View (cartoon, rainbow, N blue to C red):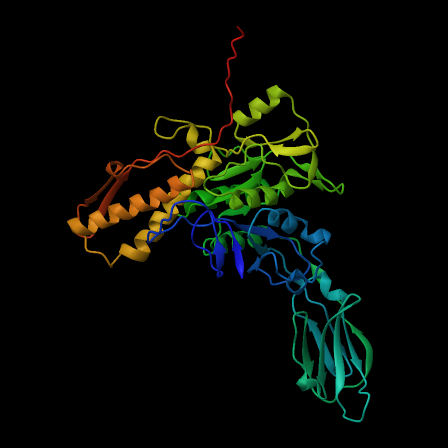
Length: 436
């Protein structure tokens, strides 16, 4: 049974989630966050497919790697804060295989990990004629099955079998020929094309390639403005001047001595951003496991970089913390002010945009009459939703009169005007002390 506390009321598992707050249960709820989309170069696993990784996922079955392997560094960084990471393998490669004694063994996925796979066929201890067929990943046996004929063998998470005839003992059929390709522009294009059909909060773009970062910018801008999908992307060192892009300026050093570059740190920041609730700011939040920054900055440099819209890590004693939880938007106007650069307030705006759309599509679109009573009902629903945001201190207290729902120019359209004031976190202290 699950349990604990909650920020919003949409848990999946049965259990007791207890907060000491007043009860409130409208039709629509504030959506949970925490999903990161992470493209990676990997030596094994499904190519050009999003694979979900959560806390209890066996990554060895997915990628043929230990969770502590160097190849999964970015996944570990993203998973420090994200509740779910959608891993997208960018690259393909050659698939390892080997044929011996009429049996062909092929790695399930292309990549160099296939060269560490081997299959042993062990004699039966009796006269049953049944052999033990064991699949090894390195020194670890990962699968065992019994069979008499080659045709009886069933593929597993690591290898596929083919051939005909009786099995014969073998000390080890070692696969060979597996290799890893480097991702190219077409792989990235496939990734962004597929990302449009995935559900996530934040995308990491862990590369220094300017062309790829520009692809990410164009993709996020189109999704936010044309499709109404309120996502963000985290890139390294890009002055995009857009609220949908977070630019990580520098990297960090971890406790074990590992250096995380700015491009690699996009994975952690994407996890941190996706995992932050609508009532949470990441300003002065620590980088988990980091002990130092890789670039020491002066106060004037920090100010200049903040004004340019960069997301900075700074040293705070033995910890590394976020200077300010901001995105790259800097071109403030009377219609689009400073609030749009603060990721906490943007999360509130994005939640409203996403959740109101869901509420409308799930409960009102095609189901509710567009008359005075129907519009009044929708207005009450919006007020109930805003009240939830107020309960978690994401916005100031809403007023029903700040919401208007009127009939549009056509009989099937409604026009909503709604005033909302997001709550920001305390970041600046101005104090005057008078000594008497």
